[in-house]
Image 1 (cartoon, rainbow, N blue to C red):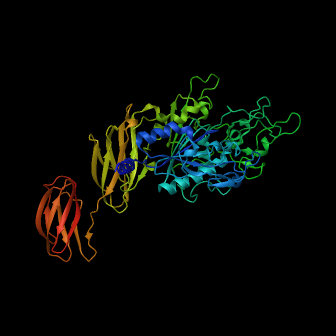
Image 2 (image 1 turned 135 degrees about the horizontal axis):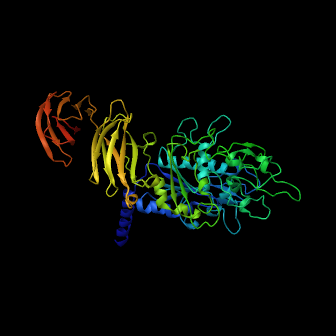
Image 3 (image 1 turned 180 degrees about the horizontal axis):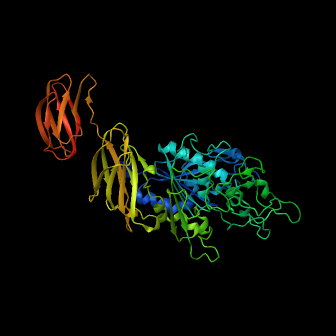
Length: 586
């Protein structure tokens, strides 16, 4: 009996955990930086998991140096995201859970909104051990490889969650991985990494936030061309790609710029021979195609600009945030987070407006570079839901999602979060807001032409609104407005909507009953086929009967004595009964 009770309690706990799990509008994918791993965001992911009940943390392991050769770089040989065998050892990659101990890995995912990619070979089961230390510098591999690998992870997350899009968060080099995924095109201007390169939003990304990313480069790591700094990390592919300028090369006619970031020919940084030659990098195959003499198109416009390359731009249908940091203890001439100069942590135009213009924000904090991934307060602010209609998060019927009221750019308190409700053919919906302590104070509804339908001030933690969707539209916008406080970022609101069936009710035998107009301001008519009359009972939302009468076909009744709300109408005929919804709005 005791074992049965324990088993019952276990099942109850599992059930409660599943029942209480919340979901974000889109799943988040965290991408770490140079020499990092999924643990870069450990504290932040655990905070989201534990404080907001977003489910367990899921990890996607990818090897970026699968041929175990640092002197070559080929996508097809180096990037592996499915289990494979190397030197008779099974290498476990792809899906697994998040845990500190490799022996506790479970090679599968559980329902969640939290995902992280990992390139660190020491964290990959089968790749690290006394006799099988494989795939050195996997997490220091070329950014070309990283963008390609991110495609595989996004597809996995979309398939697993059923989501339409994802949110991407990159720390340091991870932000460049995101940009490689979003920007890179081939000679025909086709996006090579997008999930669906044939459509405008084929990247399947709703939101991007980067933290401490060297968008304009970082020369903090050693440049191997300086012979007095024999540092192995400085020779890595990733360091090669992040340097905004090199020391000097005989093969370059001018002072060399960072080729991955700003463009140039790979041969410029090839190893030089002779007594005074430089050993340079492990390889200079930046685009990982087997050749070291290619012209590379940089993701940025050029060393004299602070913006992205307009020939290969960032998409304009994504919301961006550059999270930046000035660590005051960085005791050198540069001002930044200890690894990246503050002026290189974001992209901007000649007037220092963040780009892409109009859809990009910046945030500033004061943490050290390697601590940024665990600064969950700034991360949560950086993930603020878009205010623009064009970037509104999509909500499907009956899908409850959470959001937060947070301080905005420049510390502004007013936060506007915009959602698009995909109503389809449902012309009447019930919108439900639940936001105790969330500090949301106003809800506004708009049609798809951005015309205001209804604005209401809310004071209760739960608010329900019945809305008629314009006949010409298949949805509406909802804007949640609040004033951020020191604690609002800890208290998520919940938002969802339900379609209300107001069309005729059929029983499958050439019979129906209907009410029109519905919704109504009180006066409505009843229609039913194959019967002359029936009894009707009307119940309020508390299942209390508020009306009972015998009616005839096409009879008109005035229900103006009833309050606004959703009612259940029960039709009682001689051989059957039918239930229908009646919506009263004034």
